[in-house]
Length: 87
Image (tube, rainbow, N blue to C red; front, top):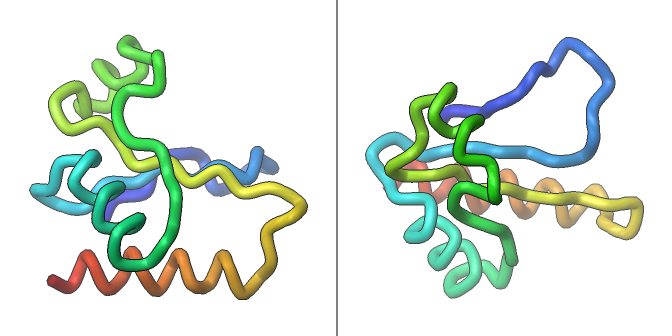
């Protein structure tokens, strides 16, 4: 798994990631179908960013958390990603 972003500074509660060798759309579909977790996959209208990251082909999976999300929901998302990464 690869996480994208600067984790040394305050940031918005958005997490972008990829699972090695997996298309972001497939990961997003699996998160929804297997865990009921809704995420966004693809280029997110930012083609230049994806060119710089080297993710043009697969895009990224983006989690957008808010103040309404609970700690339990965030942990469930992390467990779901871990499970998919281990498949």
